[in-house]
Length: 275
Image (tube, rainbow, N blue to C red; front, side, top):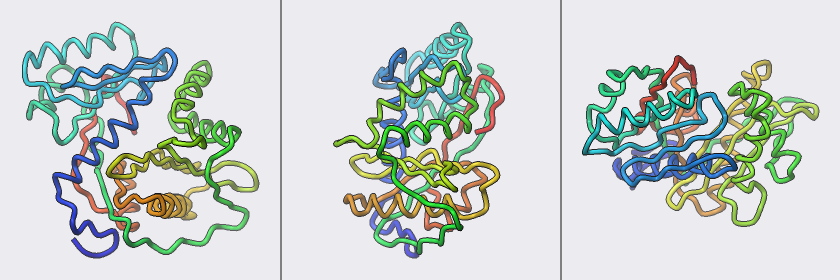
């Protein structure tokens, strides 16, 4: 595959593996914060937190080949008893092959198809100009981590009485500290944070997560600027591949930045949700 973000030299199976592994590694951190639990059962990986909204209680991986319906029932019942909504990711290597049908039969809703994308980092798009009054900087100081978290609270509608819990989870990522696998960027307009992005450095790829811009500041190319800055930093750190999972609406934005759609995640939930 040639052209911007060329994936020449990367086999499709290897790309899918990197997309899945980076996703699992990144999101597993949410199960390691105070009051949270990460369940790694070998053929299933899931986490739960005290935050009672999507996406903070998630089945990340399911590759079950025995007692399938009972395992599904046990997981769904666990979150039903806790009275928190469940998000279930059906990933490319999920088992059984008819998992989506089984989840729908159990009552979970198919809420979204998320394109999974990748690009090589050998070439890079031109950095677009920033609007007047806007600056971009990497998140290093604790005060900037808190501002990043506030954008996350806004994006997901995290209840105020759970913001401290979210802050404790974010601290798990050790942003700005030596050896951290996570790097974050913020765009500021006249001193106020308006757009954000996070990256997670896996062994074979850098994952891009949490791209969001405040509603009133959209249409200025801020997401593109942050993406390019983050990818340049990853390339300088030795990464050769960037991966992400997109919303359907953002897929074309990422294609313009050289990403290629490789596969899909199917998102199921115990209640209606828009991600």
